[in-house]
Length: 31
Image (cartoon, rainbow, N blue to C red):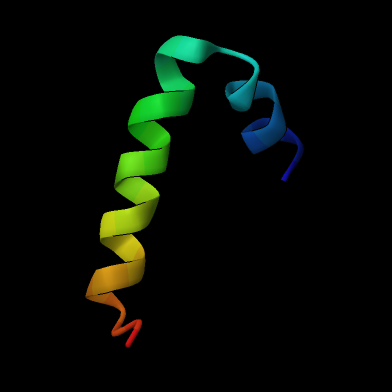
């Protein structure tokens, strides 16, 4: 978790990560 929080401090990673997370949630069947 600590590594993820460190990545969130980088805006160039933060926004793509949000998109990837959204896609991952949809793929796991978030109805």
